[in-house]
Length: 267
Image 1 (spheres, rainbow, N blue to C red):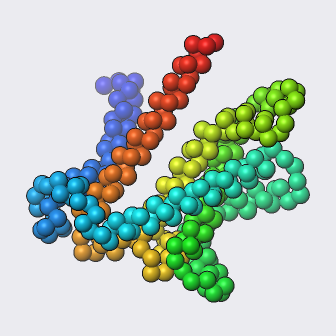
Image 2 (tube, one colour):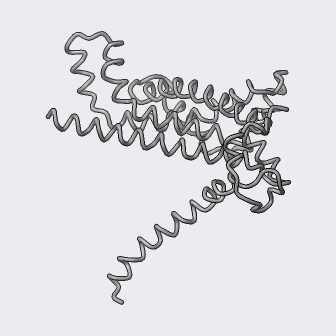
């Protein structure tokens, strides 16, 4: 076999193997979401749909999932708003300590989660703030904010300032230029940043464990349950979240393709 032929098949083979390797845990979770819940859950015991039709029969897993959704939704909303404003400020405007602000925004990305989680826990303790859902939300906002800023900054860098200048030349007020030109152009980056922030917040364990007190989130529940065997209801929720994420990505991709096709027809 020639060197050209070897290179031709090596990369596709490696890609397929890497994809299969990544999908094995997800496939395992999906398959075991149909495992019989009335028997030992450490191995395959039998096929049933009861886990999907009665997922909240195990009330603990649903409460933990609800806490994770509440925390991730709140943290994502706040960090997306603040992160977008910060990204616009450090990219478009000159102000004192701009370089220092950029450095501080990147520090959480390089800080180990255990350090950030322990530091935040110590601050809450010194301030006398009881740990719970609120402290986890604050911790996740600080944790995800940098990711939002970096993602939105990348989108801002691709924008053509002449589009906004054209709006101002037509005597549009600044708020109208932002809502009609800047914000729609930034929306793909903002949506990507919010999805990333939600995913990071939803599945975080280390920072949550330091700052949640007695409150249980879905990652904490799964970690504790793994000692005695993960309940099939947890696999159901994990599978549902995965398929929901895939569907959301497909919707955005199809919507973007349709908008591009519509613009091409107009031109």
